[in-house]
Length: 56
Image (cartoon, rainbow, N blue to C red; front, side, top):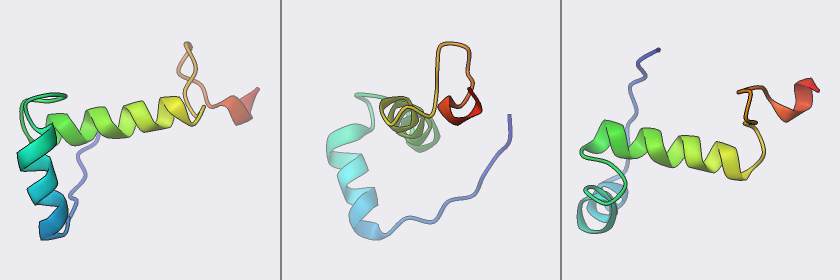
């Protein structure tokens, strides 16, 4: 696993604090990880095998 530093605007942090953290993750890192993985899955970048759909 690779760690990545991300800078977010104050408005995004406010939304995370009020609406998201605690519902889909325990902290910022866990929440953002879940958001990114879910978005990638919805867009079809992930398959059950963990491969990109473009690799097929």
